[in-house]
Image (cartoon, rainbow, N blue to C red; front, side):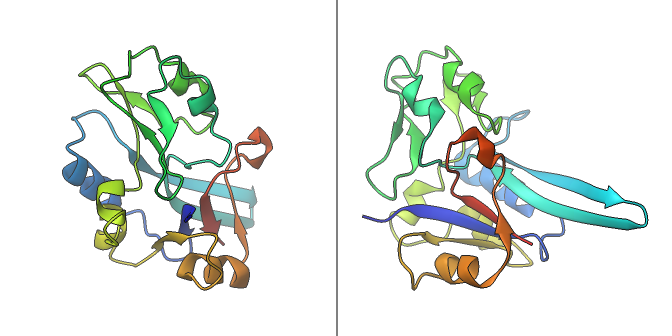
Length: 179
C-alpha cells in the first residue's frame, strides 16, 4: 500500500501563494480559513543569515495525534495513501484534533466541522497532481509514494538535505523540506 508524502523545495519556493489560492478554489475553503499557508523564516546571526520560504499544511503524520484523540472517529487514516482525513458528517466540532495537532494545521469550518488539507485525495486517487502542485509556477511541490524507492519524492529525499517540522513531537510527519 502507498504512503503518500510531499516534498517542498525551499530553494525554489518564492512565497507567491498560488498554492494557497489553488487549494481554496479546489476545495471551496471559506473566506478567513486556509488549508495551507506560506511561512518565511530567517535563521542565523548577522551577517550569516539564512532565509527559508515554505508552504505548510497538514503533515499527514504516520503517528497522528489528531486521529487518536477524536471521540467520534471522524479523524481517521484513509486506506489510500495513509492520508489523514476528516469525515465531516461524523465530526462534532469539539476541536480536540485542533488542539492535538502540533502544526496548527486544522480549523473549524463555519459549517461546524474540523477541516484540513487532504492531499487532494479526490485528485490523487486518480493519479492527478494535488491542486497546489498543479499551479506552482516554480515547481517546488512534489507528491508521491514515500515507500516507493523509485518515486520522485523518494529520489529527492535521498539526494538532497532535508528536514521535517517539529520532529521532536513524535508524529512522524510526511512533509519534507529540501534545503
